Image 1 (cartoon, rainbow over the protein chains, first blue to last red):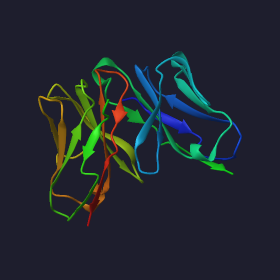
Image 2 (cartoon, helix red, strand yellow; image 1 turned 90 degrees about the vertical axis):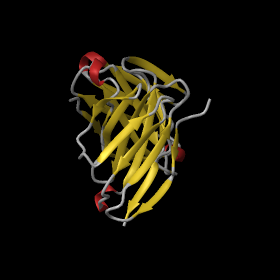
Image 3 (tube, rainbow over the protein chains, first blue to last red; image 1 turned 60 degrees about the vertical axis):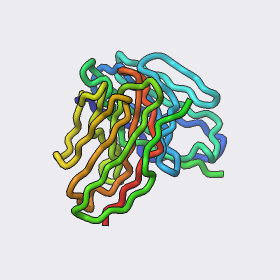
Amino acid sequence: GIQVEQSPPDLILQEGANSTLRCNFSDSVNNLQWFHQNPWGQLINLFYIPSGTKQNGRLSATTVATERYSLLYISSSQTTDSGVYFCAAAGGYSSASKIIFGSGTRLSIRP
Amino acid sequence: KAGVTQTPRYLIKTRGQQVTLSCSPISGHRSVSWYQQTPGQGLQFLFEYFSETQRNKGNFPGRFSGRQFSNSRSEMNVSTLELGDSALYLCASSLQNTEAFFGQGTRLTVV
């Protein structure tokens, strides 16, 4: 099945800095999502982005499906951006709803 | 519109007991997936149901089972609980093969 790898595992930045989180996947995908997990455990949808580029405020994401990677950009980081960010992917028609998660990037924004 | 609802939010059970968790998907969503999150193993796919049929299954023992009802609500059951089953169980719903939305999770503690 598809494998998803995220890097870096941990990232510590000062408030106001920009960050780039990377997600590599092992096969073609028809579903690629980025999530932020809040302190209570809920996964908050950031982007549904199997290909192309999207932006939402200070966050943007790009998926280059042919090269099997996706990037999440966070600009002008705030302390509220801290937490764990997950990339998740699914591929193949029969497994399109079998979403596989990466191990996450733990982002810490220092004031 | 209402999001994915999981009940109960917290649960404490004793080894050897069984437990049933419930998930109500977003109205109109017919696909429901279940995931287990532990510190050691991360987020792992358990199974996915679509129109009352299990379409995909992860690598979990037979003690983990699920079902989906005609109104798309889903339940998962874990029998003969073990200490290692302590985890956050997350449910996701989606239209077929599209963006998944997660509930707040059920935190199960086995003592």
